[in-house]
Length: 437
Ligand code: NMX
Ligand code: MLT
Image 1: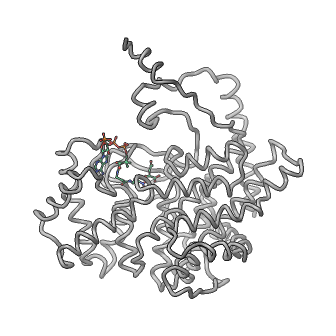
Image 2: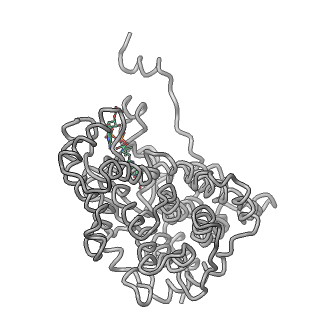
Image 3: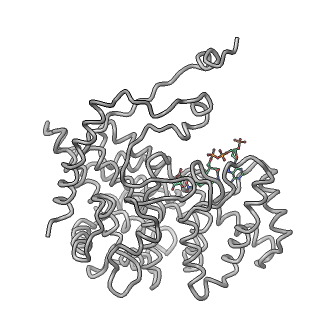
């Protein structure tokens, strides 16, 4: 049986001539124009990034290596005794484009276990931070602290940089990081919210199982973790966390510099922090109603009040999607099929918002997409299983998002993508292009 790294190398060798041919013979082919609007409002729709790891169709939603979310969950080998796949097998899929066998997924799981110990100095860094630091700041700090262990940076400093083989160092860094992020997230959680008590990993468990264990959560939280990490993994390359990671890595910065920067982008309320904001919003609203599920009228009033105060409705809208996010639908299905959760008041409210908010956003007339995104549905599941500290939710997103970001920067090195450097123009140049005197 070939290892993941051997299979990846084979795929890289197959892919390189395709990329080289496009860059050499077709570099001048246009992929479209850039408008003034795109230059001012965040380059939305500008086609200037390349990835084969996932693709986002505005109407269909995400496909991982060509597979929809239900197809991905169905195809991947499952953890024994669970209906959910190995996160490690999903990493294999993202990196190679092949669905692994059970044995291949388990081999990755064993490899991650060997790499999963969190260095003592990371614990020291976390403990030195004020305990009320945001968990995303703690998460980012722990990643950047590990830069001293970068295989890529150390070989580069030793003069061993080679364009054709440097992907291997990136692969080592990314795998080391991937194996440690779950334990680091769980450490932060228990340090901040569980009286600084900690639980050791169990060598018999997979990544999702160990994350649940180290969080102090019983089954089925292991399945929730597996589902979460896979659903949040990748959303093609233009989203803030993936793009930031890619951008920073394009300077030949190593995976630690790149992903801690990606995490900093994920921490913004328009991006990953929206899952925290959704829970903040719904909880504050429920509190005002004394914990009762509101009437539709009261809900409409609250949504309008949010909009009229100039705030966004968190968890709704999207830069690319123009329909309900299939990651939202997947988590909604999880809630609907889970006894207890199905009738849980907070889920009832989330369901009600889904029925009401798109109509209000349409009437409001600003958002191009009135439908819910992944963040509108993720917090309620955590809350139900007792993870009620909603400022922690974006860390969960960040553990999952690493799968996509780190698979992408491994391929960036393998294909030798260039340092990113778009051109800026001045306002006067825009006015001239617009024909404004
Ligand atoms: N509530 C109120 N207004 C909205 C919303 C919303 N949910 N979504 C978009 N708008 C407004 C937006 O602020 C903008 O207003 P203005 O012209 O005054 O600047 C206008 O509608 C046009 O924005 P769009 O082109 O539809 O959206 P854009 O692509 O700029 O931004 C989001 C996309 C996702 C940042 C935006 O929809 C939003 O702020 N949503 C709420 C926050 C959220 O859920 N973020 C999570 C995204 C997913 N993730 O996990 O990263
Ligand atoms: C994501 O998962 O990154 C978000 O949905 C935002 C995006 O795709 O732009």
